[in-house]
Image (cartoon, rainbow, N blue to C red):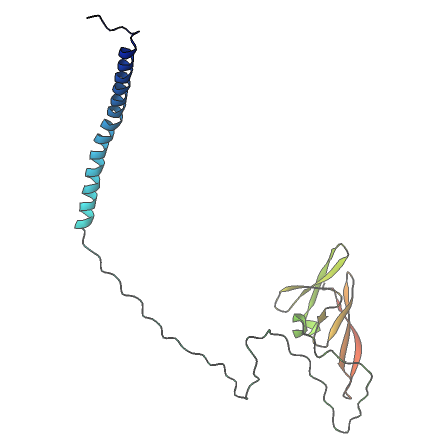
Length: 201
């Protein structure tokens, strides 16, 4: 019998397969042995923890809070009060038309407020309750800064309405706001009146 030679193709293939198998088995042993030792310890700890949890006394479950009964609210509208649709936008009421005695002559001078426009927020305050705090300019835009009696700051410009006399802002300067008000003339009609709001000191 002749000895195996590394040049023999059969013996070389066999040695290569055996070497590969040995390397694979060594890798499996190196990986699995530590995992087995660790896994056994962690499982024991887990079983001990679960057993301790099971031995704890159970806590009673709190009762659910009582359910409040649903209360139906009926929107009152019996004719004694003014009925307002709660789902409609809220606007300040338009100014009342001036009253005149039956024998009072009415002078139609063509001047009257616009009763159909939506009232602005600052029209709910008297003019003397507003304070001009300064002006603000950005590009070609120019505003006046007003403080209401509730200390809230407002920004207005030419064309806005303020005060309770249909006062429309006609001009804004650094120290004053010019207004044109429309007030009752006492004869069932209206008349225009110039007014202004000076810068607060």
